[in-house]
Length: 134
Image (cartoon, rainbow, N blue to C red; front, side, top):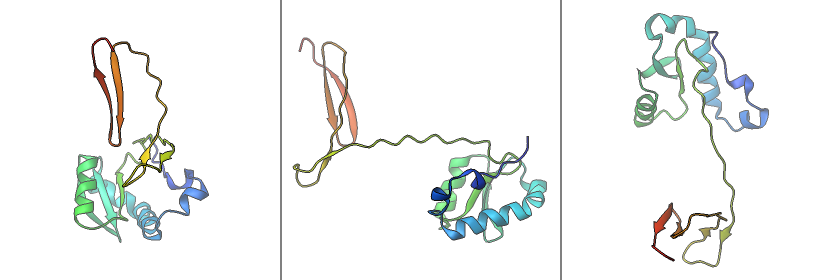
């Protein structure tokens, strides 16, 4: 499979919000990628200022270690399999009840068709509670 650079696929509006240091790390990674293939093929690497700062088989562990070491703008990718991991993010937009104090609460419309249950929405979770014959 051919390696994919994801940055050129992003819209300019998304690219302009990315830190310059991240973009530099990504560009440098691709300059030395062929060298990295010899030692790190199939591994997730965090690349910062021309160096691999951590690597491993588990993406989340590499992310955690990169954050623990204090490199928020490191470029992370799987050497030799770049661009194969796909993230899908959902964006939910909703109003807030600003009359609730001490802080506003999100408001959402929920369609609920189950019988014999009570739907409760709290700030951090959605709960479906069985209440018998409500």
